[in-house]
Length: 92
Image 1: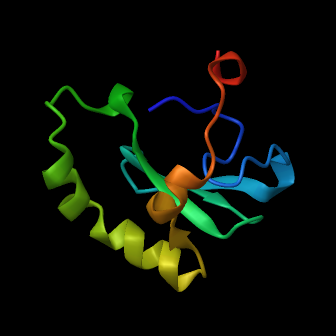
Image 2: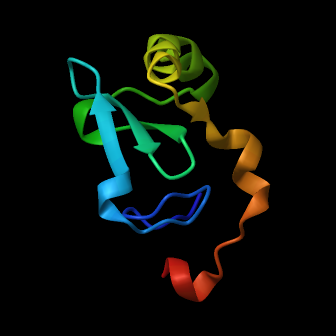
């Protein structure tokens, strides 16, 4: 979905000191985190794969990232996704 790369898709913070990411050893999977709302979103860096992305499979393949994020105090932000709508003009 559409969100600005340097903005939390859940709380909308643009404070660069509050935004970070962790990557797996291969650099394929990333966990983008927000210190403001303590949420995360998982991402796949498509530059590191030529395989078809199957989201249901990727959810299973990234369970360790979920565990790592939650151990660091972050929660998946998907439950908050409907709480903030980014106007099209902001996301362009």
